[in-house]
Each structure stands twice: as structure tokens, then as C-alpha cells.
Length: 418
Image 1 (tube, helix red, strand yellow):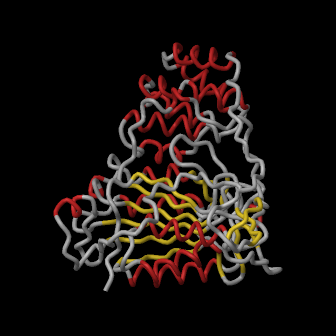
Image 2 (cartoon, rainbow, N blue to C red):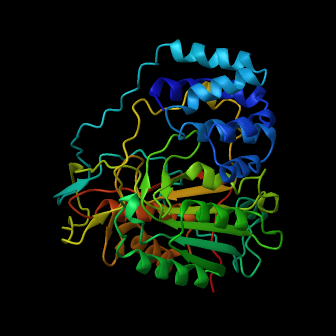
């Protein structure tokens, strides 16, 4: 799809979500080959009319050059010509000037350090990890310690055993047509996390080598389960990844057939509208996949950080030959009508747009996450531990990587430990 058409859909998304009548669109969208019957069934199961309209507009961007003019024609044929005219006007409007980020290398002098070493750190230190500072505090474990009522009100209660379901989707071998490499070391990542979350009292199911539609079906199957007697839900995805158009959560992951699935779509299967039995309960997503193809050499900073580690010859990334469209930014009016997600945390192995490194022994992110959970899960909340993960991973390798998260949890999250 041409960029002006993508831009028009994003700018007009708020009005389309508010006014679009989706029911008359299904048959002509299938007849014209814009969507397959399976895709339409998935769209129809997205929730309310507004949810269906929103997902339709998002997915339309991925359906090729003819999707936009065909959509305009279908709108007019179904008596929604005013919406078609609005999209045409948006096409003719000039694009907004892009907001450029200054990512030039900088040199920082940290006060109070007598000994200094030259250490390369990632250029991207502002990825939105929302967590409290590392100032001394008294840990508040989820179970077994006496805390006052006010403190308990700020902590998710994990009383069920098992705490909840944990689904691990591990894509290792990809089809020849996908042109995606085998993800050596991913099986080790899967085994580590399977053991770790079982030890943390989760009912773990690991699935290997799923096509995009199979991934979607597994996620929908989990979202449709009754979680009423459980306190939490975890989804882990280990795969190749890419940049995608988004309005809430960036990035996408690939099925073994080379078809992308937006992270935003994955997360929304479990929101309050689509998964009522998880309302008010924490939903955690851990994504080991590239956010794009950019490789970061970092910048020099003087501090007593760990020595730079030189990666071995077997170092690989989970990037793919995906070219993100220029101006890939959501328009403000496309976001105005969306509710803020609650009780959701998405932890990414890398910053959006950048590669995520993996070796034969596993990925930097999963190896570090597993180690941090083993050492600190009994005493620290999840956000504090994710800061430790980001700090440790950022010190690795000659190429740099920094994990981060989008956090919409309302309370502190402590794992249940023995």
C-alpha cells in the first residue's frame, strides 16, 4: 500500500472507528480478494463493532496496493460514501513534518567516580521502562510477609496455585519461502523459561514452529479460557520480528510461514473486552524478537560498568529483511478514541527498530531474564527486575542492545515463590 494511503487510514481512523458499518463490508471484501474467509472470521471475532472496525483498518494496510482503492469503492457501494470522501481528502492533505530524534553520540561524565573505564553503552536510554528508582527500599514479597493494608492495595495478589497459564511460542525453523533463517539457540531459551515459570508456579505450555495463523489460534484459545480461578497470565514469544504499523504496542513477530503478526494484535486478544475473566489481573508479555534491522554501535561513557564483551562468531540477530515504510507514525486523531490498556506489561528484548542478538547458547535477553528471575524473584517486583535485565544486556557485545517495556500495570507485581 502506498504511503499516502496508509497515512489517510491512520488520520481517518478515529472517524472510521466511530462511524464505519462493518457488516455490509465482509462479502465484498472477500469477493474482491482483499481478505480471505479465515481473515474475515478473525476480524468478525475482534469484539464490538468499533473493535472490528479498528482491526479492519489496521489490517487493511497489509493487504497490498489495490486494497485502498477497492476499500473506497466498497464504501461507496455500501452507502458510506462520506467516509470514502473523507479518506480521499486525507490523501490529498500534505504529510505532517516528521519529528526527528537526536541520536548523536554524547559523552557523559559521571561525578564521584575515581576510577574510570571506557564503556560503550546503547544510544537509546529513554525507552519507556516505567519503574521506581533503585533507591533502598523494603521488599514487599507477594506472599508470606506482613505488610500494611495500604501497601497491599498497591500489590497484585497471587493466591492461586498455579498462579495462571503461561504460553511459550517458540519459532525456530522457518519455511524456505519465508527467507528467514533458523533461530539457533531458541530451543535453549524455551527450556530455560519453561523451567523458570514452572518454578514460579505457572501452568506452562510450550508450542514450537507455528505458522502465523496457528500462532493466532493458540492465542485465541488461551484468551477464551476461563481464568476466573487464576490470578495472572503470561505469554512468551520467541521468533523473528519486524517493525509494524501500530497505535498501542510497536513491533511484530513472524510465523514460520513468514507472515507477520502485530504485537498490538496479540496483546488485544487479552484485554478487558476480549478476555473478561482476566479483567483487573496482570497480563505479562515477553517478546524475544527483533524490532527492526538497525544495528547500534552505541556511544562512549566513562563509568565503572562491566567490561565490553566481544561476541563470538556465532552471534546472530532476530532481524528480518523487512523495510518499514517512511513516516510510519500514527496520527494523534487515530488514537483519541482508544481506551488506555490496563493491567498489561509488554517486555521487549530490544528497542523498536533495532536488532535483538542471539547466540548458539540462547539470546542475550532470555539468558539475562532467566538469571535475574532466579536471583531476585523472591525479593523484588517485576519492574525492578526488568531494570536489572536492561542494565545487564546493555553492557554486552560490540553491537549494543537495550531491552525495555511498555507498562500499564496498576500495581506492583511480585512472583509467587517457594
